[in-house]
Image (cartoon, rainbow, N blue to C red; front, side, top):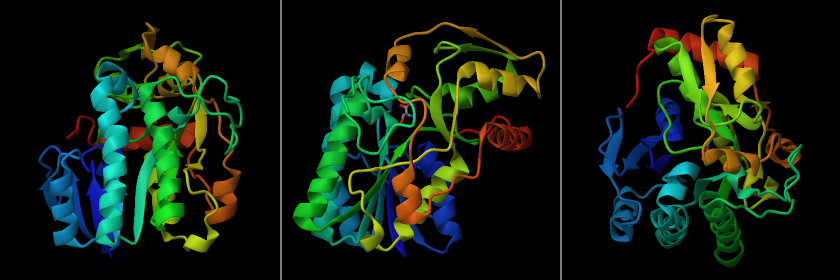
Length: 311
Ligand code: SER
């Protein structure tokens, strides 16, 4: 399979690129920054439509994985660029993929597309959605434009509403769920972490191996079986900063957090605590492997080997 990835230097790309290379795909990994991956790479500003078109023309991928994004906190700090990157660029990617005859497109939606009037427990696939953060607004618009492209142009676009993704080897920046990764690194380095969310703010989360497995499984499913053309709900685990702190203290008893909530608290409070992923389970067999305790163990083992690695 010939594959092109955008935003390949980010948290998901960091794990997806080796997974696709390992299964024998011919991968071109693109990002705005220069990348150092054992596969073909190219620099691509996702807003540069001509460069994107050129790369698609030259590489002729069957699949495109569109991961370039500004996460929720960064989008609040730079709203115009947040909209451009999260929405306009996504539309341009879909257009360019249609023109280039790409067979399948994956792009990442988010739990941020839900809002304060969405039920927060076992959030259903099709609830009321009124996102208050700009990132979520762009993701919800992205879901609508994805389904529009499928209906109007037959472009086979697939997506997941990612919760917070936790994994080793890459320190995420610009998100509201980043604390879940930062806390592990802080436990190893300073034994203390200042958390920007309140201790009882429960959020849905996913271990990186489950996130990659979900992408690969969704993309491998025959298209007739997919009933959701916006983005699928998926659930892995839910925890609060205090619960993660307690989990880490099992390994580093002297570790502790202090809590100084900032503007990200409001975003987190407008997102679900847990997700109903019935459609994903039914349509393509989604089944997460990691819960809080197995995720923490996997993180700990990985970080104990290469604790400070980050691109
Ligand atoms: N992880 C994202 C964020 O925190 C949510 O999808 O912005």
